[in-house]
Length: 394
Image 1 (tube, rainbow, N blue to C red):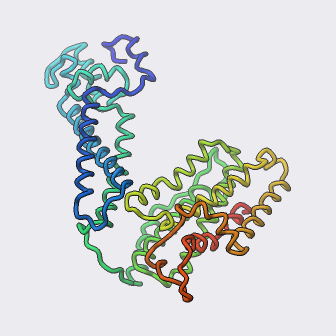
Image 2: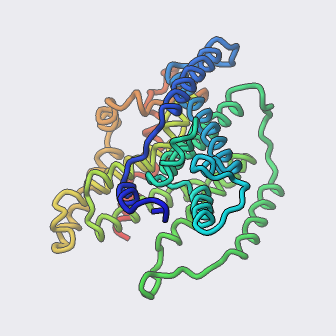
Image 3: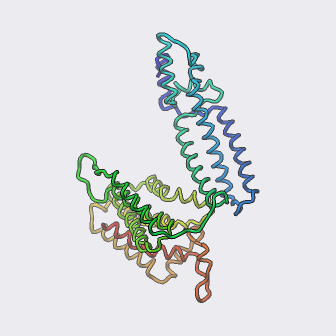
């Protein structure tokens, strides 16, 4: 605690929950009202596509996050810039002090730079008309504002006429030129992977697989941007490699860590799907438009289920583990390589989530029958339905 405050105040500050002042509660209520008004104006605006109820609800949340974040940053800046904490403590920010006052000023200026969430700094902040929010709240607020800003930008670029749209064009020189430039630039960032405790680095460690994924992501982006159809076969291999790493990485984690707890599982599901869910709701797109996410989700669940059943025998009885892998291999064959009725029956309950009705699938088959709603899901999942098992074996 500060030298001029008692030790009891410092002790009370430890572990104290973040507080929100009455002024911030009123500001939050006002921001919510403004956000509702802005969302209502969007609903009646002449947009290319009317907002759905989900888009309206998200618009309110995005506006609220951005407004509150902007106000909080402004208050924090003013607090540090104009020395409000010094004024609240009875010291003028530009005055001359001697002895103990100089020490108090130094402590307060340090607290301004590190806006502490403790009660020590809260004692001076709470005297302000609108005190700055605690660092914990600011961290969450900045993350929400960042996500909101990205989603709003995506909507503006993809769903409004504010950003011009044009046809894609093919250009092999540009495609390979960008790839070569990135490759050369990456040579300047090469570094040796280090293992903990000085152990030797084994192949396909986390940093190596992340680098692998990053290069494939670059290729995906450039492939779609320049319509590099000649790279289709390579892209198919990259997607299979992603599915392979799903089996490899998840098997390695669950086999070594033996962490089958619900928090870890839900964390993985959140990491795989949180961004695509926000994108789907914001742009009113279908989940299957981003089919790599449901593929990862499905095969992650299957790896988890394989190792979870009889998990106490995974390391003690290798033959038992091999039998489980063989069982899921046969199960995959039964689901994807048997008559269509098996796959359609098992996936029918998930039709609202996995259906795809893109423009290219509104056409009919040659015999005039419409394509089934899960045609895209069956096609995408069947291409790589055994790759994840080879990842577990590896």
